[in-house]
Image 1 (spheres, rainbow, N blue to C red):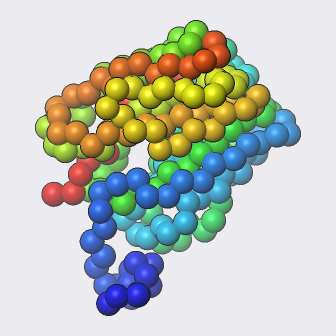
Image 2 (spheres, one colour):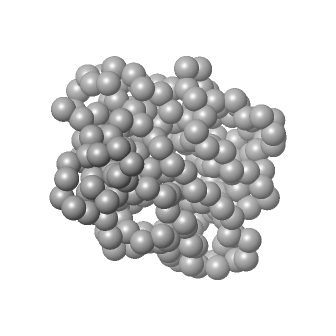
Image 3 (cartoon, rainbow, N blue to C red):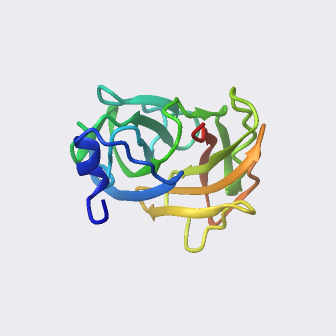
Length: 221
């Protein structure tokens, strides 16, 4: 079947075995204050993939509503900025964009990440960590499914431009970085067999208010 895309095979009902990894990313800015933030989805989505969305705002106290078919994993509006993380297990009807609705108009930055090859179960996330300064530790997470070779995300959302060269936690590989005056998002990943994980510290060159989480994605059986 060389040369036939996974999307065509999936549409035809043919099973596709994909590597367990993050494979595609989209990112952008919302440069006008609005309650409707449009996020572009990654390319190459097929049924069973998990799509993640991240929104970071420079204003605090803002609530988020994700569209039908999406689940918000976590949000925070306390402190110096607001942020939210959502996900969807793809069914092949996603389209190219989604709109995240705010309860108060704001500027912002956003990102979406596609993960393939995972088990089709809900990812899990820890209690939010908040800090002001030049870095933050996303904190520890113990997934309910026990010790497996999970894909772990360390996530940092910030209320402004964190500056060049942010450093991800040790043993984590940065997979996306978006930073400007509207906010910043950094996501780093690690594949690790463990019952729990605390990634360690993100470091930034500019002092900002940071929101951080650790997220776990369950591997296939």
